[in-house]
Image (cartoon, rainbow, N blue to C red; front, side, top):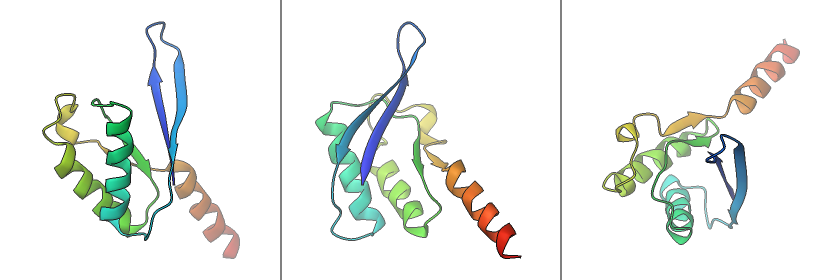
Amino acid sequence: MVIIAHWIDNEWNLQKKILNFFQTLDHKGETIAKGIEACLLGWGIKNLFTVTLDNATTNDTTIKHLKARIDDWKGVILGNEFLHVRCNAYILNIIVKEGLDK
């Protein structure tokens, strides 16, 4: 798994940085959430607005677990209401594949 941070700097330029690559022992939501949390804490990140994941059902569990773990962080934005953002490229890919199959 790879974790990439995107943010706007003080000059309003979009920045991005690969924070970590890590191997997961399984594809369980709790395992993935713990890996994400460990990476964020390792980088000292306390302000998290969104996490973009594909539509796998385990990712719903990932977000649920992550929300519970970071809910008391001082930098929580909008009560984590918009924490889970589904990957638009993944969704578009599914639409194209389904359309081509029909």
